[in-house]
Length: 199
Image (tube, rainbow, N blue to C red; front, top):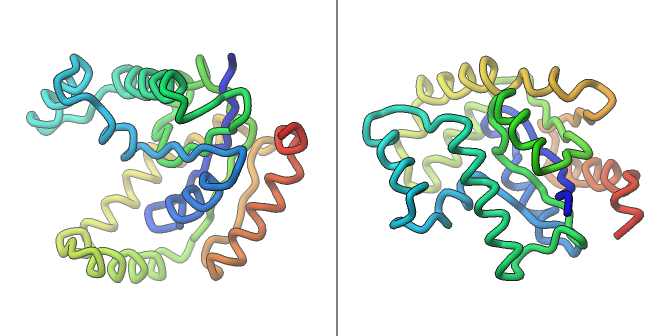
């Protein structure tokens, strides 16, 4: 059965995780974050060992392996009853990260809508991310050069996904407002979709 999904995309600190988790906890939705998928890997599996090899060498995990991991985990969640694709829409958070990953994931997931959380004021995002990193005890993540590098990677590798999906599939939302206002607009966007009417 085809898996329907809504993709949340935005620069680091734009609120993808906060909003994605909130929507994903509602009936009829299933939050699927990249971190959750990698943490769920069986450490003794061939895929996990392959990821470890790339990571230990300081290399990025190739797109093909990343998407194989995503597909394997989605199938595992279906098998153990955690996720029911006939009744639940995936909320993709942090997946896909590149245009090539988008092409690969479309082989087994149908992305119905893209929610673009826009936050052009990078200085505001930096302050938000610094505060969050310090609150979580991640001092290295609070360094401005680290944050700006993450923005550069997003602009170069992830943002082109918007061009891949095209304007008709994208809703751009101002993520610089209070999270409640952002959530309200996301909810209005989702309730207007045909997939929501079918829930």
